[in-house]
Each structure stands twice: as C-alpha cells, then as structure tokens.
Length: 353
Image: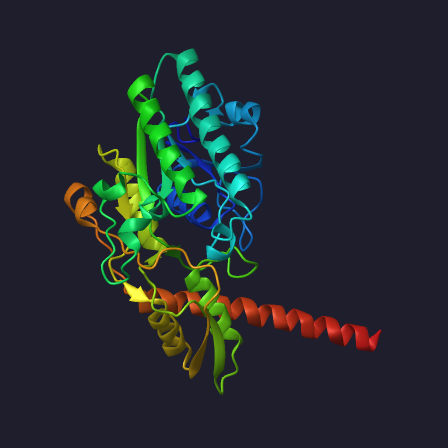
C-alpha cells in the first residue's frame, strides 16, 4: 500500500482483532507503521480498536473471508489469525461446548486458508504470510499428568492425545496450515501459546483464564481480607505469559524464516495455590482458599519448554509472574471500581427521581 508520503506501507490483517491478543497485536503493528485491518464478530470490549479499518464480520462465512483477505487490488503482506471459539477451563472442559468449539474454529481456519489460496491463484503470487495461534492444549494428556514434571516439548505432540476437543481442533488446524504450506507454498508461522494474560482480557463471565479469574476474586475481597473459591486442590501447575511478551515473540516469529510450531510461553511454573498467593501479595490482602474439588480442571501439570524458541529466535520471557499479575490486578480492580461507581450513581438517580 502507498501512503500519503508515497512510501510503501506494509499491510496486515488481524483476525480476532476484537479479542484480547488480537487487539494488542493491532496496537503493536500500528506502532511499527503498518496499515491494519481488524476483523471480528465483536468490537474490542475495553478500548477503541487502533486499526485503520475495523470490520465486524463472521469468519465462518467463507464468502465474507474471501473479500476480507484482499486490500484494494492486492493481498495483505501479513495475516494474524487469532479468531477462535474459546475460553477458560469453565468453558472448554465441561464438554457442553465441544461441537461449537470444533465447528466454529475449524471453519474459520479452513475459510482463511482457502481464501488466501484462491487469491494467490488469481494474482499468481504467494506473498501473504499467515500466523496461526495454536495452543498448549494440543499436547498429549499423558505428558501432563505429573504436576511437577510436565513434558511440553514441541516434539512431544505425537502420538496425539489432547485432553479436550479444543486441543484436538488446534492440532488439526496446525496440520491444515502446514499442509497448505507444502501443497500451495503459502508462507505460514505457527506458535503454541501457553496461558497468555494481562490487561484488557476477559475477566468475568465464564470464558476468563485463571489469572484474570483469581485477580477478580481477590479484588472483590474486602481490604480486611477474606476467602475465595479455588478450583481443584490448587496443586495443579501452570505457567503464564504476560501479553506484551507474547506479542514480542509472535512478531519475532513472523519476521523470521522459522515456520514452527514453537512454544510461546513462560517457564516459571507455579501451582494454582501459588498463583492465588501472588495475587494476594500484590493486593496487600490476607486471602484464604476454599477449594472446589469437583470443578473442571484440565491437565494436572503444564509448563512451556522454551528450548526451541531460544535456539531459533533468540527469544525468552523476561517478566516475572508477579510483575504481570501486579499490572493485571490493578487493571481488573479499576474495572470493578468503575462499575461500582456507575451502579452507585444509578442508584442515586433512582432515589432522586
């Protein structure tokens, strides 16, 4: 694309731009000078999109996707595919949404690849590079039964045995992206995300991830202290990566010659009990835990292994979990305060009416 100064401006299409990671990626690309089109079925919930153009479209509609992957008479330089039917453990592991998760997410990925392939055939080129956000949920359940020694090396993915239909769809879609690369020479990059968190992510409603859920629960506890519900015995382990680090690693992958798949995550493994204690520490509150043993949990242990990304991209995480939780807790606390202020104002208006 030629901008006002008659210089060539790189273009990017961000799918899932109304969501957590997608909206942050739009901001990053704009800071690098890209012209960005954001697409989602919804607008960003917590701030205006930074995209040059934002379209509300359903990516399950193949015809709509065929139009979206083109900018004017050209194809995009880069496509970032974050769109998916997803959520936290309360959404993924109950099995109530498995059919929708698999159908919706697979449809989106198939539509995107087919649309890019057809556009390339018309133009006789394969310039568009596509990033696909896979997930650590695609790793075999058998390698994540020991909370102290989970095995999430990239090469451990097979024989395949994810613990959820969400994980199976992610693994299937990985294979589709690489098949389109082999058969149609479409440049692809695939990363397996490990529990990305931070401000402007979903923090209530059932689709939030553990860090946001814990921060929310702690934020609602009075300053004098109190108890929160913790799913499971709290001994299950995870690692969590702050959003800014995820975006940096993803951009490095896109700028590299390495296709992946590669883990993008933190190696700072903690128990869920320790996650609660971290949130309690940054809040300054005394928190006790009430464990809900029959809650949906997922695997017993999961931790990113970053050997491959260090080797291929020279990237590693730099922020501690406590640093990320401090920022996230502050943001969620502010959301709660703002809501309470609105509710108080509304109640006063009713009294005075």
